[in-house]
Image (cartoon, rainbow, N blue to C red; front, side, top):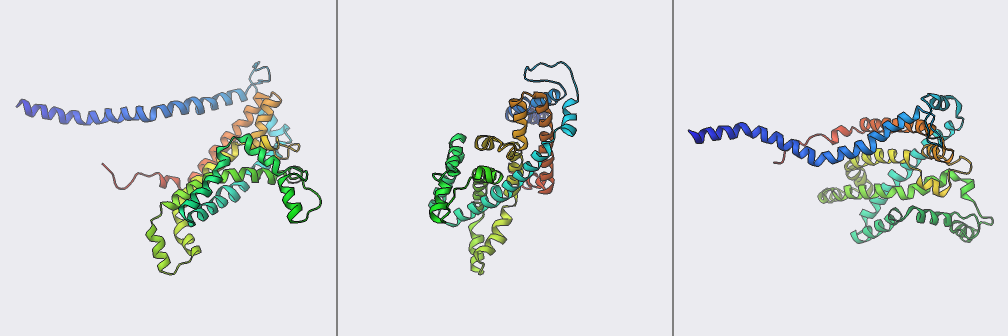
Length: 317
């Protein structure tokens, strides 16, 4: 009888042990991530919102709470419309031309060749991503040098017979920052798309070729449908990344000439740290946070990301 009673106690204690194990796993695996998210994402957002309702300046002193910063945003900052328009152009042009289209072309080309050649080409393309930002921009400074010694002018003058050197920094600054950021930004999409293409079963390509499908038909009917989720992820991630990135723009053009290449994130930086208007910079940052949340939710809804993250139909024990 005692043995039967022990078995009954074990069966009753079983669900409790499982619950305790789940809680322990939750704390061990997700606990550090939750703590870091609160410390480095949630708390800074709260501090930013609080500072935006103050008059904090270069002295870092707060003498009172006010809505003056938001009044300036909605009625007193005449450069803001130009900055927002440039930011939207910069984000969507860089995303569409380079981070998606060009990255996809790179992935298709490098996977169509033999594996060694493709790996070598992808490795070369990743070199700017692995190099210091200053070194990458120094190369661009040499390329766009307005004198006859700049790489671009050397090519144009020797190959095309151009007589007068061009100055892309002053003549086409917006195109310059799009190309400079796009070339280095395409590497991420290239790696993700390449991994997705490599994961497509080989027999699908063999069957398509046996049926007489050409290269474009294979890309359209086999490759692109398999890249739906990677394209969705890259679109959302790169949109949010471009909204808040200004490192290469600051190093290459410093936001100039004048404010011609000053995107929204760089405008916040210049307002806060160049002029010492920390409260106004915090108020501007509130809107970029809200914009990031809006684009994230829009992308989540448009690409139906919930379907990607649903629980598997087959449970592996």
